[in-house]
Image 1 (tube, one colour):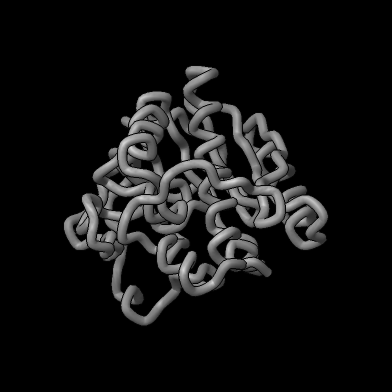
Image 2 (cartoon, rainbow, N blue to C red):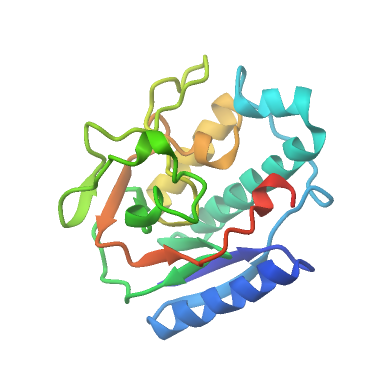
Length: 224
């Protein structure tokens, strides 16, 4: 299984984590590739942004954060385009991913969360008080549970859809990639974990999780 690991070139911490992610992926039988991501200095926003989105707020309030979030979103869009072009299921890993077990040929429809057990725990930024009591249940590939807590809350077509719990580690089929790209074409884009929602793509999770986070969250999506 091919895996793409996105990192920030010239960022010492990102490059170090990406190399560790590469080694962990290779050790567990994946075919990893290090891919230089867009940054606030290299992104050129040419796509529409969905109305009443979080990105619209950033554009008004914080230009640095806006461009950084646009860069992150376009790293994913570029990956989706690659999945469609090559017509094969692939894995997206952010630089702080640590692969802990081999790929098990999971059968899933479109989008599969690979680090679900760890997304509401430190050092991930979703380790918040309001999510501390949420617990995953089941084994293998499952749908998101009814009590899944992350909902798209902006006032547009995606409101109340389940959102991806971050974008640190997921697998994507060509079918899922086509649906996500179609959503961007029709509605526009938002920050990455907001536009990956159940209105646009069928989100599932695999348990136990084959990927966890590195011990340090570099917060590069915040422009640091």
